[in-house]
Length: 354
Image 1 (cartoon, rainbow, N blue to C red):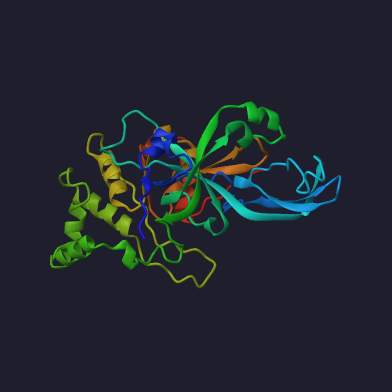
Image 2: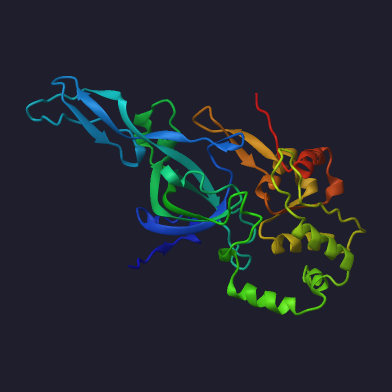
């Protein structure tokens, strides 16, 4: 059985409310999760249903909450025999489920990207087994139902329900039903699967395997618009390929990847080589050193509005995990390059928040 789905590739940018309460499919790039604590996602437990007891006749009944929105009963089930309007919630009978919020960013191609506009974002709600199904930096495809939430109700932490009812500003989010992520578990990331290789790739592999100078061909394929610089391109190729993965028999991390530093006079195409490298890599991040901060390279602790929770905003190094991060104008950086030492040696980023 086939169903027609409303593709929301550009709707993520336009915030189109024509798809409200409809089943849609939208691709995007996963940004840092809204609910994260240090290096793990913080999960919340939201109430699906609750048992109430009538204060007048003592009748107990269960009431469900649509979209996890708490609503007190309006009348007793024994009406019109009982006309009670006050009910006592039985908190011990609450039925809860795991909940997690993520945010995706539009991932448009260069030919359809609008110049001078920041990429738009869209909030996604995950429940139950969909939690932890993707990591920041993954390219994901979300399938679910678009819904609207009152802005005042979403930021309400003090119970100001009356103000939320009179507030006419709503925000669009997607109640996810399935998540297809390009990311894989750490144990499988180093190992290619059949799903990652297409028929075109197999044909290209056969053609390349017949060439006697395979390494030279691959090196020249990196940024072909820049003539020459064979040694620089060869170094970039080796950086992309990396070394052999050591068996994880000890707790000491032995990194298989290598780092590359390109030094040269201005006007030789160093920036073009770095941008071409990010396009070749399956996951590539390009940043400029003279406009980057320590927090922009690693992570930032941000306090969420309406609550006392903190979440992490991932920087360039975190988003480039299991890929490559190219930093241009490295010599223009001040003390920010010290944040790269741990990531380059241990391939980890540690933070501490008091």
